[in-house]
Length: 208
Image 1 (cartoon, rainbow, N blue to C red):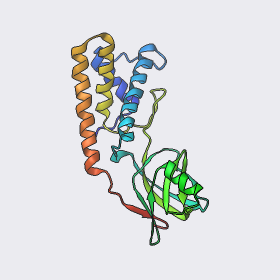
Image 2: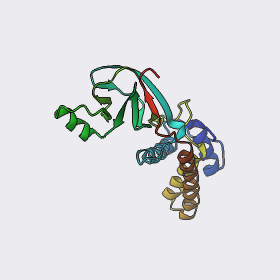
Image 3: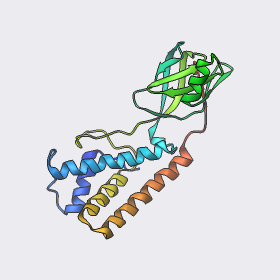
C-alpha cells in the first residue's frame, strides 16, 4: 500500500492534470478546490466504513478504566466497534443498539449488553475495571492540505478520485470515466483486502 501525505497527493494530481510542477500555494483557488475534492474522497471511504467495511488500516484497540457507572468515554477517534462481545471474567457482554439498551435500562433489566451512545460506551450492568476492545478509527481529515500525516489507505485512490472530479468539472467525460473507474478499482481492492484481513469477532475483556 502506497501511503501519501496530502501534499504528495496534491502534487501528483497537479503534475498529471497540469503537466508541470508549478504547484498552487495554500489558499489559492486551485489548491482550495483540490483539498475539497480530497475531503470528498475521504468522505466516500468513510461511508464505506459506515456501511460495514472493516478497513484493517483503521484498526485500533482501547483499554479504559471503566468507572462502574455504565457510561464511559469512547476514544476521540472512535468510528465503530470491531467486536460484538466484551468478556468480563466468564461473563460475556453482547453488543446491542442504543434503543434496545435504553429500553433495558429504563425497564431495570441487566442483560449484560453494551452499546454506543454519542461519545459514550454504555453497559448493563455497569462495566468496571480495565476494559479492552478493538474498534475502527475515524479517517484522518486534511482541512488545510499541508498537514504532515499520511492519508489512510491507498494513496493512489485519492489521486484518481481528485482527477476524476477535476475532469468532470471540465466537462471531459472521457477522462472523468477513466479516473473514476481507476478510483473504483482501487477502492474495490481496498474493500477486498478489508474483507480478508478484518479481525474476527474476537472476545476482548477486563484485564486482558
